[in-house]
Image 1 (cartoon, helix red, strand yellow):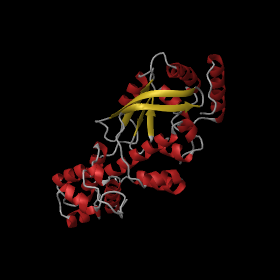
Image 2 (tube, rainbow, N blue to C red; image 1 turned 180 degrees about the horizontal axis):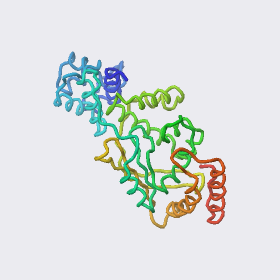
Image 3 (cartoon, rainbow, N blue to C red; image 1 turned 180 degrees about the vertical axis):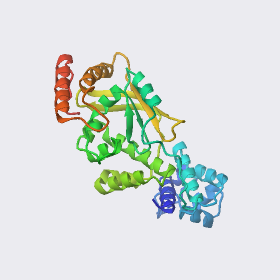
Image 4 (tube, rainbow, N blue to C red; image 1 turned 135 degrees about the vertical axis):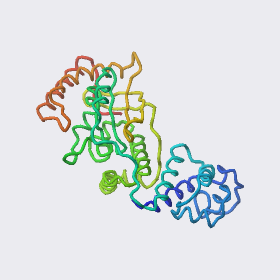
Length: 321
């Protein structure tokens, strides 16, 4: 990706979303030619000259000081994720476009991390990288993300949440709040692209998704970024139905670029019962699920087991409403 274009589009998009009133500036009458702040207004708020800000917004962050970046953060009212993204863009610009790379995670998860996942028997848990490749999971995590594991993908590539979400017809069914989930996915990928713009696998994935998905391409053009460490998500699993799960997402410091996410349900909730059902359903997958795919026979057996379990518990996995 072109770092100058990334800087230009990010700053312009942040400027366009802030009105003079939000910035504490007088709201003069008459029609404004821009939806948000003018460049000269941002320059005034940041305490820099108009010419200097124009140079910055054209993508030239090389040599810019931290104090100027912090002034832009205040002027553009950036949140923590946006501030980190701006500093990542400046770091890339400071490298002069050279192959200055961040330390990337290994393509495989360390055995110790897998053992830790396997010890978490009551909560689905996965380890992913910044591209949203699912690199490891415990038993419940693999069962929960079964549709992602099942989804078609390029040979030799791990399951990828973004590719499943935007390119697989099953994606919208798995994510009942699809628009919100899609916004989060793209913002996480945009954050990763700022952190490591030289990741060819990430660049290739973004290119594939932009080419094949209008929904992804539209969101990518917004330049939104975010951090993703805790919250609540909704899923519709094909075997156990609706799940409302709290998640905690932890960056693995010893494995830069990897993230562990674990999911829990409120006790005495239907989602808690669904997780117990998922554990029973997962038993049918133990011998069938491997690192790459499920056999058609195993999928049929697992699907029938899920149907039996739902009938026994009175749960439904019908269409979402």
